[in-house]
View (spheres, rainbow, N blue to C red):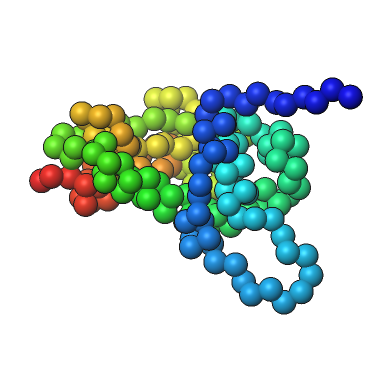
Length: 179
């Protein structure tokens, strides 16, 4: 019998090797009453991050992780609703600041337009962007200009302009800026 070990891309292997112990604090498990225990939240979080980083679909990740497809979809919705991804980003920014990866003296802001997956009007997409000739969302980012590390992110409808979100981004980044 041949033993085949998959070789994951470096990004995937990095995420699989990380310890996401804080997920237990962000998503508190209800006391066990009976029935099936369910999947470990850290495992689900890692595989959902892999899905996002690699751009893979739920079915591909489901097969690789050995987790039910609908469980991944429902867990992603739950993590979004509870703000787990946002809290994860904040914890990464805190860690980067603590390790000197954020200088906080100069920042840069830009936004990127992202078309909707379905190419149709989706909840929150805001309508047709005539400049981009598409329907989608905008990711507004504020980064440390010296190191390139993201400090704050805001996702809006696809028709919002950059200057509208400069002050909110700076307010979110205030703890990591020198002045």
